[in-house]
Amino acid sequence: MIPTAQALVSPGKGILAADESTPTMAKRLAAIGLESTEERRRAYRQLLFTTPGIGEYISGVILFDETLRQRADDGRSFAEVLSQAGVIPGVKVDRGTTPLAGFPEEVVTEGLDGLRARFAEYVSLGARFAKWRAVLRIGDGRPSAACRSANAHALARYAALAQEAGLVPIVEPEVLMDGAHGLERCAEVTVATLRTVYEHLARYGVVLEASLLKPNMVLSGADCRVQADADQVADATIGALRQAVPAAVPGIVFLSGGQSDLQATANLDALNRRPPQPWQLSFSYGRALQAPVLRAWGGEAEHVGAAQTALLHRAAMNGAARRGEYRPELEQAVVAHA
Ligand code: 13P
Image (tube, rainbow, N blue to C red; front, side):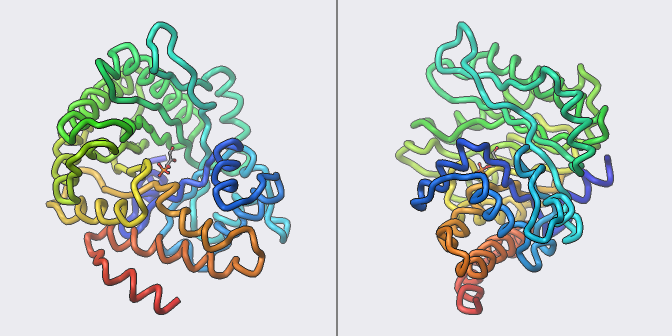
């Protein structure tokens, strides 16, 4: 598992999160005017995974349960398609959030029941790493200590089960960017959340060297009047992570969480322009990698090539940001080339 964790955060590469649940995928397709059918979801994921050269910038892809069971037109399973392209297949194993009883507006992630048996099946289907997402919302007195510990407990139980099955757990406690709070409040909540998470991972015996962290960046709330720039985000994010993430963790793979694709790249680049940290600083983007791809595709077979070019371009931009070598001019250069 340790070599897999390290491979997922190889220099210049990051993770593509393509693990939208069926209802979330329906929303993404509706946004481009398409109905969500199993065949259309398969066709779209095939487009992503067969992008020529994807392995140059993408180390791993997170799949949804349904996708891990699907096949490309040529009969290969998607796990085989990815492995043969040098990309490690992973799987989202949580079953989404549910209201936390007694704590209005707070949620806890479900999916532990039967997880040992599901892991055994996922291994047989070719998965080599896993993901579980917890969601914390900033508000009046929120997140509560109860919400932090309920979610940290579930993350730790999940991570221990993943490692028992031989899979690298990606531990994802997402502090949402929704709200009018400032950067400092996001930093404070992120530190408190990550401390609770690592306390529970230690208690449940999770081997940190064989795990990855998928956190939010420290950002100004989406409705905050003053928006921090990339340098402020990078300083606040590294400052927060250093308070709470053990050096034994090989890599931190940020979620994009509603940032625009350009913002997510610029922020990752600023993070990687700082002095070296104990962990690799990489990406595990969903929307920030896929938004331009969905737009270019629009459900049309004749646009598959253009959509794949859009994916490779975004992946290359984030690959450059992994090295702290991104410049906005690169966007034009590659678009012109495409
Ligand atoms: P976003 O990058 O769109 O936030 O998605 C990443 C992810 O996998 C959230 O669980």
